[in-house]
Image 1 (spheres, rainbow, N blue to C red):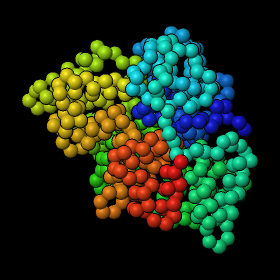
Image 2 (cartoon, one colour; image 1 turned 135 degrees about the horizontal axis):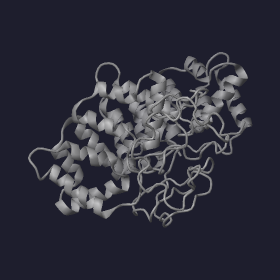
Image 3 (cartoon, rainbow, N blue to C red; image 1 turned 180 degrees about the vertical axis):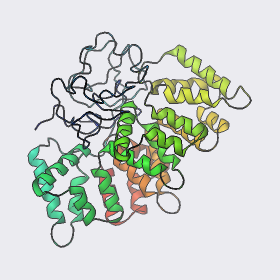
Image 4 (spheres, helix red, strand yellow; image 1 turned 90 degrees about the vertical axis):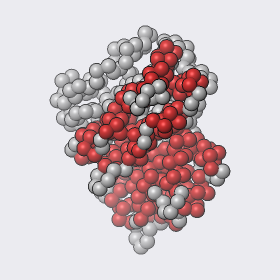
Length: 454
């Protein structure tokens, strides 16, 4: 059966790619309605088909548990959304959304605002000016086979079965297929595999593979909202907390993804992500993560100069111009303002007070809260450079932080890993591929190189 609008062409939003609304559907903060298939928890959020298939009147009015209590949260969408001229009834439209060019309500976005334009479908009318020609297009490294239909799913499923059948395993064949398919195409292959052979593809892959190659393959085969939920759970389970993973995930994703991950977390672990974060963190750092976990960042790309000036003053008064630090002001501004707004705040702060904003953070904070706030500044200023640092840190020094290396490569490969590679080369004078060659080996190295290579 065909799924309208599936598969989406650009499934991975990030801070530089913020559509103004969470995707249609999804059940953040509460249980799904009766009949909802947990195999597709994000219901149109991210790289999965809408499930059940989009039909008029679905979900039915008054379906149990839908919408969940308290959702959408108060104040969302922000005032002025949708702008005049947008389709009101039934918004967003069931097909062709997000539009080919993400809308910029109310006027032309800041020149530095970046967006990924490849969604497919016709753009709805703009209330203001069209996006500027300077808007950046992201560069993925995974370029999935297109077009991709039932015959391709069956051929890939058969090829994977052949690679695992009999004596020995053809790892090169498995890598050649999975490293050249998108996440949504891998989900289709898995469904076709079980329909043809009555076996779970991921279970078969895990039984045939081992070590770090298995880790990468399982990551590739996991729907992204579930993958991020599992990574967050790993970061806060057991002894100690992996603050860097919490920061990376919660600081680098937009509202729609935060809500999808929270929903996946609830379904996987029977607990709310927010409650687990509260139980494992504390103080200013814990409050920052709870703020980010709300998925309430302003996503309006239009910058208000008056609000920028007010925020610059407030941050100066809360930090440099007082004894001690008013952490709550930093938290409130950095966790809630839009990407283009924060970029302008950082720029104006430096011009007005003569200090780069990163240095302000380093002077005013220490420990995990410093790391978290710096990550927000870096993500909002240059997301590619931030992830280049994350990749370099995972491979520098004694040993390799394989979980971090795998997560960044797998999760960014369909969005902006090509841009991250450029930033890596410029920052460290060596290609990302050469670092992987020197730090990894065997089939583990081969699949990482395949995912990283254009």
